[in-house]
Image 1 (cartoon, helix red, strand yellow):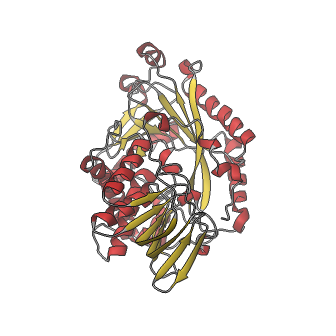
Image 2: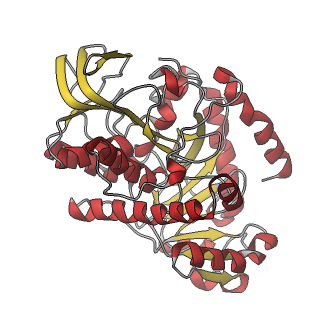
Length: 441
């Protein structure tokens, strides 16, 4: 495999301190052995791959899922658990210029459908995912940001047919949101959840539907042959009529070759505190269970979980090494302490990081792999893959089955272009990160 980060980024070390695996017995399926045949082979046992496999199996398709580690080992089992609107990181005006207003509005409808699909899967399969939060709340970290909330609320109402709640600076304390903020705006779509419980629930549902799932089965080679493909792992040869590549931020530039340079893995970091008492929560004045974020360049995302632990995440990190991880641990703790000073002495019980994927035009792609018959891919949800990754899996199943069961927006049909610098494209982030650090953003 040809990957653009050091081997450390793909090792067990960045997830060693992850909180989520301590909350559930995650699935550890057997390794693929010998010769295996299937109608469809899915590479990647995260939200996208498992959703695709589940929807296909429920339609009677024989599916095999292969993962280099185990279900949810990558970003799907170590994210912040925000099941919300998102998938694209492109501003509305950029989408309007590139695709037109009708396509932009269509994508908004798909965002809503993605959240609804995840909710439906959770309900239909009886998953216990520790859900909380009535939608998602944007916190204003500057007065200028707060002043723009009324206009943003009107646009959200037009795009998503819901009415956001705008909270003024003086009312934040009454909502249990005391901190360095100048206002808040809640969009009532989405929920917070335990991503490990959700991805394990998807894996179990797929298994129960007849999907064969194999772990410790990294695909090393994809060969086209008459009637389909052969996938080679260390211990098996898997022959399938169709394949799905659903590896997102943990993709390889040569599996398949078409992926080379068409995605950029980017690090996100998370800490989780020990459980806090009601007195400790009151000392800070943050008692809201809303999932929240701000819109800095180095995005912060955070939520007080039902058990009294605070989750705090932050985008940043370029080195992907033991020393780099330790530095980012200190950086994110510093940001946390400044935002919630009353909790500066509260123990951080867990720290980890993982890779999400961004595209050159900052939109996701879900569709056929150009130049490869009966091969499909979905990639780049820009840090919002809980809902959109699950939805993309259903879209992939629709395409394989030749049906139009779910809205497939035009914005998700344009294959990603290659980025400059090829294997060195990580360097594209360095000046942006440096500029944002100098601005204090």
